[in-house]
Length: 137
Image (cartoon, rainbow, N blue to C red; front, side):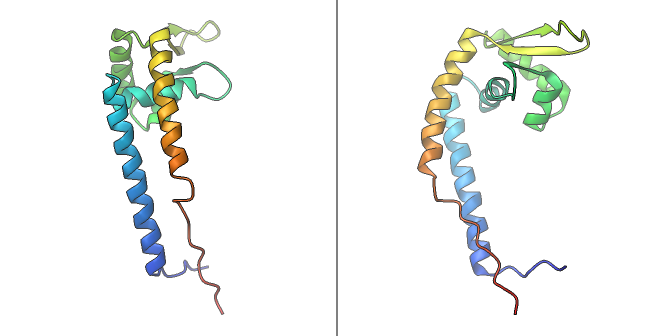
């Protein structure tokens, strides 16, 4: 099965998607910096709080979510710990695992940022439209 050829509408939709995605990223960068943290610190806090099924995440899980190397995430965690946003602790069930938990200051800044990000995302409703390929005769 071959991939259908792209037409002008496909390129327009892809261009619009990338534009809106970058616009949202710029918004997010500015919002995080206005709160006194880096955009990557915001993402780290978000991935800890948003991890499915529990209130913490491991270093490896955060590396996957951030699409980063574990040693880079460890350095990011050290900066977040120094800022009083997170704390690391050894897992009670698996001493090889390090759990990363939000501290109250991290919860506070994350809550403010998440609220304005949600509002920005809601403003994008209906912006992303994927054109369907034309039916082959």
